Length: 111
Length: 113
Image (cartoon, rainbow over all chains, first blue to last red):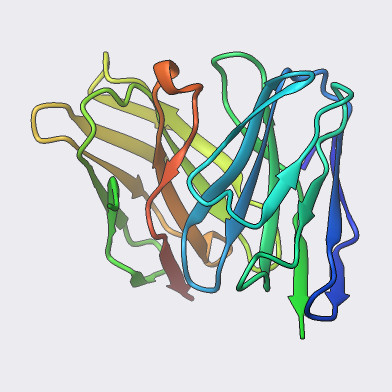
């Protein structure tokens, strides 16, 4: 996990509520990424940011929003528009053109 | 459209045996191919990676074989140990697309003592 912190480890919310997942890094990496993992499946990219104040949609951005106001932080908001939000959410970081390193993940359960 | 196909979905191997996981890709622009190891409830950890200018890369008991013409790459785990029991993911990315990783579906490996 290195210098990537995701909090909390487990998160429970009621349907219809927005929820924000935290991702903080002290690796001084430029790029940050959010992935979603469903049971028994691979990871799918939600959003990514290569530089502060800029971010791009990944493959499954609908129902999610992000911000990148600081190099160290890339919070992900799961909105009520996300139809199936229960999943394991993973944040990753990388230096330009180099390997991606993952945080420990946040397991979100929405009932 | 699944751009990286991984097989098998699960694998059981005896301690000391060889685990082999295969991946095939479609996008010829991919130029970076990492493998990740993930234990239950944890984030994936980078295991080993290869670029298409080499056909094989070895790090300890882990070897990646790469076949550019066939658009395939594989992970070999030699002398498999119970501690290697985990889920393994292949992935691919291209610099031109911001190094976004496209993942295979994963292979659950169980090493029996």
